[in-house]
Amino acid sequence: MRTETQPDRFTAPRESMVASQLRGRGIADERVLAAMTRVPRHQFVSDSYHDQAYEDHPIPIGEGQTISQPYIVGITLEALALQPSDIVLEVGTGSGYQTAILAELAHHVYSIERHASLAQGAHSILASLGYDNVTVVVGDGSHGLAQSAPFDAIVVSAAAPQIPPLLIEQLSEGGRMVIPVGPAHAQELLLVRKQLSNTAVRVLEGCRFVPLIGSEGYGSDW
Ligand code: SAH
Image (cartoon, helix red, strand yellow):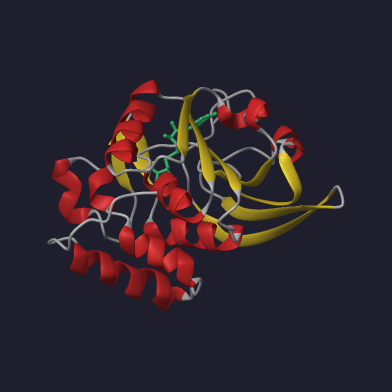
């Protein structure tokens, strides 16, 4: 998995983020809380944002994109109910922060990002932190990653116009997907479960993500 880091000046802000923004708002999954206590979020943003890394908001990561707010990562990961044997697809690697937490909780993570520069940056930091169970791919993930399917869980980190049918197809029986759906200002974070070839959908939270751009996402109409 990864090498342990020594306590440093970010340890206390990270523990306080977990206590107030996650546990304090009802996230109770101890595996998720432990993973978010371990992963050094500040290392996934540029030096100039280090001091904001554990605050309660998204942060710019280049290419007009943002690292997700810790609370949104927490509710997403809790809803996915990952098992250590799970194979996961993440659409929208961004900084690689959520990828690291997925890698702590699952067996293998395939993560696809359309911006090559972000994919490269995420790959470098994930490798330097010792994650050897992550494959970062450059491309349009809005139609999934058919060659590595099926997935026990899929997490989409950018807002889609609707749930892409090709992503449901790539879920295994009993698989879970978390995906934000809706236009720029009115999205809902959905938990989709595939069971006996049916899909059950539950709304987790209102949210605001950057757009999923691609064949099953938005075009220039965002
Ligand atoms: N969880 C990430 C969030 C990144 S923001 C983090 O915490 O850093 C969402 C990312 O989705 C952006 O980097 C954006 O470039 C990417 N994205 C948008 N549409 C995509 C698509 N069709 N395929 C792959 N990545 C996409």
